[in-house]
Image 1 (cartoon, rainbow, N blue to C red):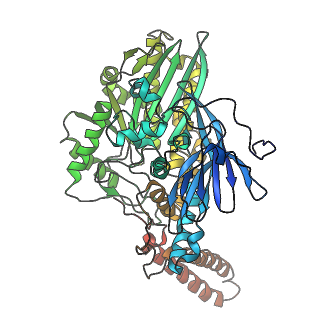
Image 2 (cartoon, helix red, strand yellow):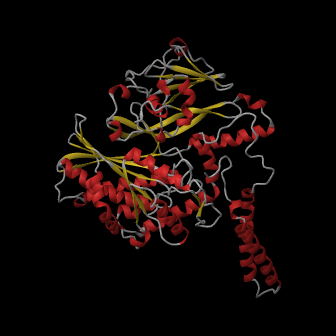
Image 3 (spheres, rainbow, N blue to C red):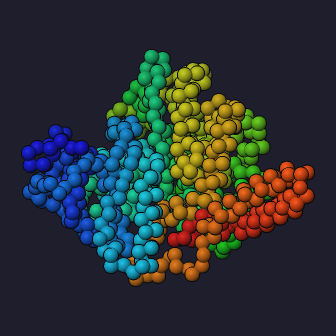
Length: 612
């Protein structure tokens, strides 16, 4: 709670805002008819009407007015944006944060919790169907409040990796953060990267109201940082991943690419190294196989992969790799998928399309076959194939004066099916090779040395990548990453196998029974589905929800198995129990067969947007 003076207005922060910075701490005042959000380190403030969500900037005099007895006052740490539904507007604010470290001298924060402020008094004027729709939309907002892996800075555009940020003009850096991102949409400043702004759709009304001090771009991904000593000198390594918002979604409901060439689970990962005034950055990317394909959940542990036949497929692949080459330069594709079964069919289709893409090198590396038995070191065979190209692409390096000494001229693009477990293991291996090279060039290591010579440094590096993999996996699949042992220890361990088993069960449950709703929440927040008055309800289909019958079917199956087991144990005492056993077993088998035959209908499915 903010401390307040006699008038009920809190004391302002002593530290003034820097040009281009956002307000670091805010006061939220909740009145009966409005919300007032006031900067504690600046003079800006604005009000949001509870009746409909209209936003109005406040003058310093209005902002300094007393709170009164009917006002609840609390501290918040950022305004994420707002969204309009049927009954009005909902404003998302950051209610708690955690210091995650720093990026090039600017503090980076992790969003711990968020909440929506409801401005929906018009709900009483809605029709019964509209009220049901609004209730569902509000349930999606509650899911969005729990979004994990969100990071932000008050004074730095985190959408840009170091190489791109180093080329900005001083005037560009002092613009408000939203302008640094927004300008790219209008091709004024092509260096910004709006792909990585998670709340891009939510910022529109704040931008229109010119509330620059309150507009905070959020990045979803992972931010890990650690420091160690090498030859009595401190070295800081930072691992920063940025998730793309162009095909945002959950594991099973966002696969492959859309028609524009944007792929699911596309993540840019930057490994930053700081030593003796030198700063180096190494970029890798991951993303789903850029074909049109799907994998619809149907209660089976591993649903069938299906390639969608579409005349636009060649152009989709071309658009994807044209975008990569424009942003990163020469691209090397590392396909880690299997060559058998449905996965093999998808891999073969990908390889065939890559044969038509000039200037992009495609390498297939069957991870499960080469690294069978959990032998992480077998990835050296992959590295041997691309070592020369990696050295040619290099990494970014600059000195304390900001002078660029070396630039990264290309990128490695890795994928498996989910772009999680196999991809994370492979990227960590390649990143370790790059770290050795970075430290050698900086003078921290001799050309014959590597970080593996120090168990402490090696453990720190592995821990960073394990935590990074877990965070990305939670965002996409809802569970921790598998194969974490391969990164941490270079082999599979018994505790690791148990942890992987628990994570696999968690994925199965979430993917089948929860992710359809979570996908709806992402589509709503990201603007892929827009709520509009007067349009037909997306939920009014006149049918029944099969998923609502799943608990009943599950209870019948469990009860049938229990009854069958019990009656069989009593057969020797009473022959009638045999008939009971047969009836119970038949009923159980029938229900199991019904559920299996209609598996897709019993699973949680998104209801707002299609797959492509």
